[in-house]
Image 1 (cartoon, helix red, strand yellow):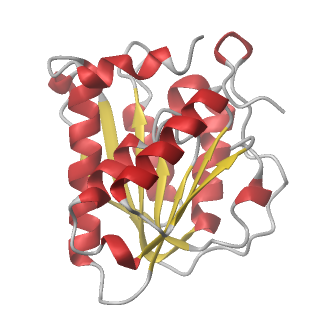
Image 2 (image 1 turned 180 degrees about the horizontal axis):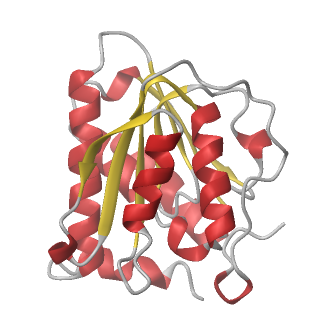
Image 3 (image 1 turned 45 degrees about the vertical axis):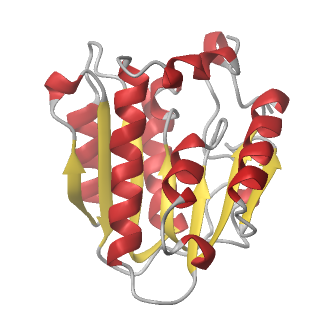
Length: 214
């Protein structure tokens, strides 16, 4: 998989990826609008070129409140994200090249107000999707929001993922219509986060689609 070229469809206004990106950015802006004044922390797993968070922050009045860590392995995507951060003048955004499946990349930032798991769940085994949902209950602060995506090709795991979040104390604040052609969800944690005592590895990309190698 060429993970830099994969982003090209974001530039096609009629593509499914462009529609998904718009939905995720709208949720991020809404989360920022609703948060009380003060610092905001955010994490992005397998952040790619960071188009979701960077794009949402670029013109937002809370942009300077946000301290975020974007974790991505592909060096071209890391370079693109870093360039986008510089162009947008987002001093609080840190791009880390590393395996996003490792908990160590998040420990000094979590629990966060915003956790992004976009472009992740479609590349994991079901067991690792569940493990990542469980990790989100450690990475997200009480009242914080997880934004996630998953394709809706059969077997459609989107409703199951929503149930997994609900079973771990999250309330659903958004779920895209199946007719949209993509799955985007947002869940808010309704209780204090679990202690960061999970295993070092959260997930591993399945072999045929590896983007976050050990």
